[in-house]
Image 1 (cartoon, rainbow, N blue to C red):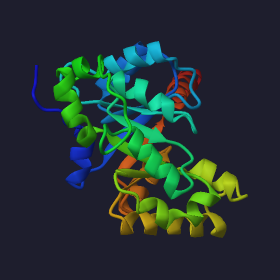
Image 2: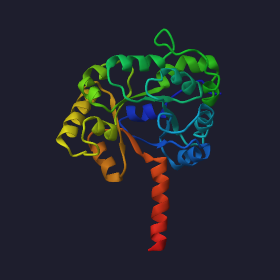
Image 3: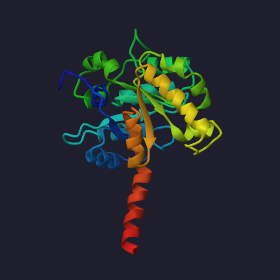
Image 4: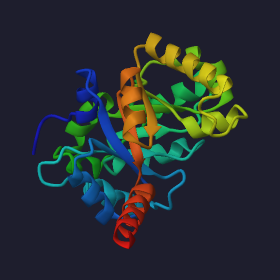
Length: 258
């Protein structure tokens, strides 16, 4: 057993480096094992849109422990379901992604759900989390508050309007600026060159940078990733499991068929 709980993703970004991951919607430890071994810094398990039950999630979190790979398991919980934070963290997830954060109160409640009292409202019961990280229950609980990564998704018109207040919340590590939902909320779905979208994105970026919080987003290709890195983003989701599988399959078939 170890005596230290650390989050490699938090440490990497604290050094000014980028941390790369991808979204996993398939309830498959086998897929997780392959992706974790491929070199991703983190994997984002999706309980919001993906059909992942809690028993599968526990096995998926364990599947990130592949050899010497330092792949950190993170989990997006459903919107308005703070109760789900407890079993997710108790399964060993080292980070929580909160969707549709639209005001400071929601952000404060989200952070509180990830911290033990007196700093927060997380109940005690890390029966599996401790063993996932090689710690006893008490050793885990004493260090978990600092190790857990807290990601707030800003993806609506309301989030733009309340950006400064949201980002003033203590405990936020990453602000994930979600392009598709944001553009949809603004009435310009998928129009990422629209002045309406670009103005809203600029306000979110400014509020995040002013608060000293890491910026994150989804990118689907290398050129976009490089552009986001140049703008200061350090938490990049590189596509998602379904798209990676589909793209590889279609690319291979196209090359064979000529």
